[in-house]
Amino acid sequence: MEILSINEASDGVDLISRIGKGDRQAEAQLVDRYRRYVMIIIRHGVSDAAIVDDLCQETLWIVLKKIRQGDIREPQKLNGFICSVARNLVIDYFRHAGRQESLTETEEVMLLPHPAPDPLKELMQKEKADLIWQILKEMPNERDSLVLFRFYIAEDEKEQICADLGLTRMQLNLVLHRARERYRALYERTTRSAY
Image (cartoon, rainbow, N blue to C red; front, side, top):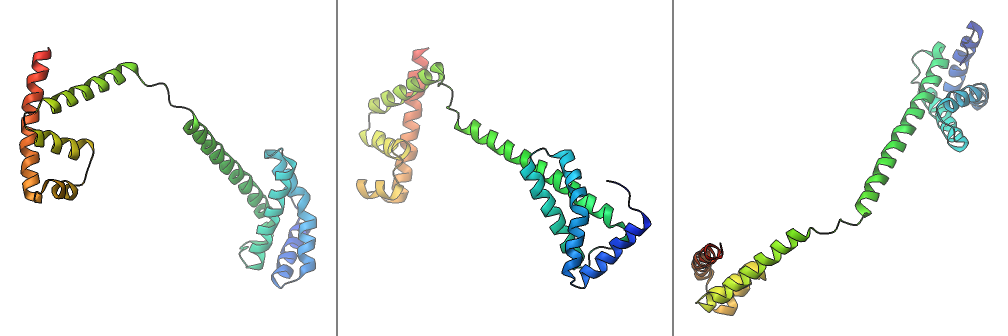
């Protein structure tokens, strides 16, 4: 953007003063005077004409708002202030566009189908599940296998198990403890003999 002469700088001070007093004609003059320069600054970073126009309008709106609120501390540097606002909006635009692109990439990755399950892992899980069922069936006490199945596999609530088996919560905890101990002993015996 070209450097303002002393007269143009003083014209900027005059515009700020008039806009601060509510002069709508001064606002129109500011927009007419600076619109072309703001467009040049924004076009330097953005190629899309619609976005350039939006950012230009936003720049001028912010500048007018700041002037109306009396937020311009150095009126003689109006030119530099307008350039800064325009450049900051271009930077913000690219930051926002980058975040949106990153979010879109993340969403696309989340939509990708999961890779095929590992056959070895599936086989090992099936073998482990088969072993658990085998041990539950082999348990000598039917109530032990039933309690272990309902609590750990079916994930029934303790209250429901107690009601169905006629046990208190304390009795169920004791039955679960003993059933786990018997299960562990049978599991260790089975896995030792398998190897």
